Length: 254
Image 1 (cartoon, rainbow, N blue to C red):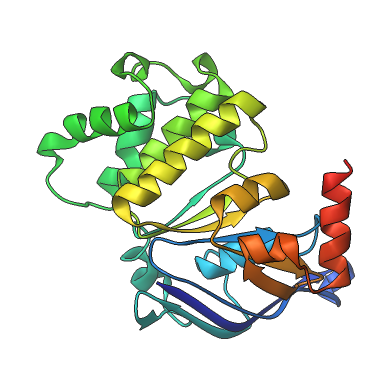
Image 2 (image 1 turned 90 degrees about the vertical axis):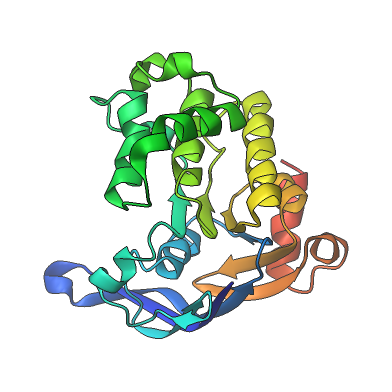
């Protein structure tokens, strides 16, 4: 589904942009159809940047990105527009993902109409169907974001993404703003969606227990590089890198 090869990203900063930060340094990974790659590492390791590079939300300096058999590394904005419905992202803060002035119904309709995915005649039915799938009722459609809880808002965001029937989703800390009990509900929705539609996930999180429970493989990032990648089970049993061992020890003793 997705193959990323040796991608690099440097950001200019400082006075006149003379200083440079190498955020992602020669990273390679692949994700199979219907599988989840968990991505862990301390803050500032480059995880979120890597997720945005994989979606071409920001351009890479070098390297290749192959999505669904197509090399998209040098796709223009116009070319990427045709793929946007297939490549989506779910952010950690659902409140910032929704327009506070729009009703939930309008927020759900907007990306569907923008991508012109097909006949809008049955859009209302599709919206209600997706809301039901994520555990919400149609009574919320006339409400605005501030009238819903964080868990409800994140499920609205999931429903909005699923309406486009994507093949690949970057999950960027999708439960970090939620209570533990609500986290479990949201994770169940994401797992069910993956099982039903064979969606591939890049799951970025600081929560190692969550990553282990949701991922087929886990990659560990450190200073812009993936320093280790194993199956979720093997990484916990036999981490190869000292940094990975420290990361696991820190989390387990927290």
